[in-house]
Image (cartoon, rainbow, N blue to C red; front, side, top):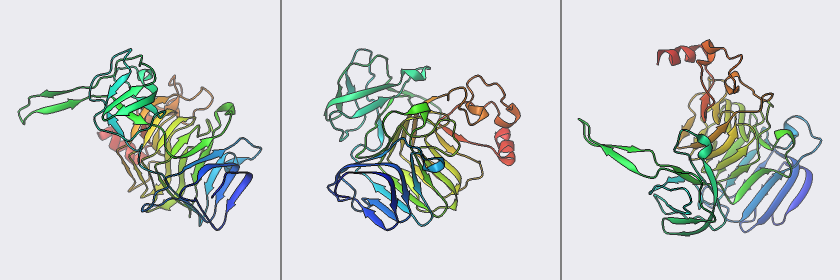
Length: 340
């Protein structure tokens, strides 16, 4: 890749690599990765700028706004780590303030989109803001915040020694230099999706997913490992998923995947999810899920995603609410949950 392209279908049967200094777009109705699609690797990260835009079309099934990693295919996207991870506030942020004190210094850039989590009982007090400038651990926003965000710890004495209660708001950068998006106007909440099929490999590190997921459609999530069985050395790390129409990361009948240090913000349905409850040896660690929303009334895939609770079989779902992290119980795991 050394220039932007716009195509109906992009089929990668051989090898497609990004020039290290490439800055541009791949715009397509559908992308099939049957060979190798690589932008950076673990040793030499991609430091350019790439947007993969999946547009509206007459395609059907997984091809509709899909990036499909098929048998024999490998998707390797390694963006830079400048915006990876998340930190906490190091000082409470009051309404009408526009300066934020961070717990650690960051390498964020002017214009970056940030999200500050709610620290009240109202999740909608989460705020998306824009960075104006950054000096050390002090970030100046383009406009003041609306709500209070807690930024202090408290130490309590106990018989075993002092314990620290940390309820500080998290703040995360949503932008990455590699971005996969549902392009243009999204009709009926049907954005893009990345689907890894049996025999395919996905290694995703420091990538932004925007306007992804297709509400009410099974198997159409921002990133979805679909019935691979054992899938060692596959992962999503240091990435952001925001404004998703359906879930964040779904692992379905797949084992040994790593989901680490990711941020998912403003999504409908459950966030990070094990679909059958039979998946094993997957590592889901250090992730942040902010602002889960209920799907529209006609687009729930699970009883536990229904806002009004009607039709929920509580003997199976144990009244589990909409959540950022979710696994569906099998009969044996339901017994385990009841025992806990």
